[in-house]
Image 1 (tube, rainbow, N blue to C red):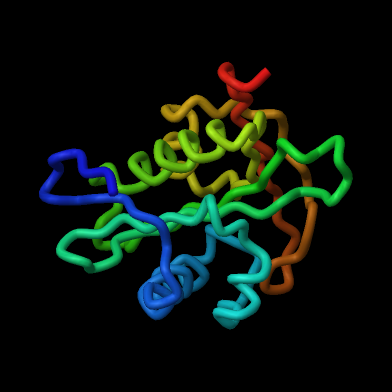
Image 2: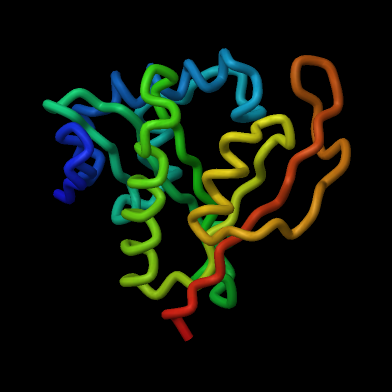
Length: 169
């Protein structure tokens, strides 16, 4: 567990018992409308199956979950073994307090230690806070994918971002 002294906030591996809080934070992101194309949260079984266990973390204060981060493999092809796609969600009450950065820092350390060379994501261009957070964590914009998918009946763009490790050769 890593703590940074910001009000006793720590980052630790996500456990199955964290799911109710993780799901609630995920649902809040869905409800806000600019976090994901998803319209409902998955079951724990589906979430657990689709996210790589060594790279799933929660931020906590007094064991209350404040946010989470997790990755999925982008491909089963061996050439892409070092490329993952991530999601990071923070409880709206904790937004702007460094929780997201702590989670990204833990994720970057974890993935680099495992030999992952690229972390990527697609972010709605309206999600300015997420884009700024990622930029501060070393992510760069690859480009905008115009009208990539429909969300609540309307076409949405996404900004493709990535962070290429300088440690993993």
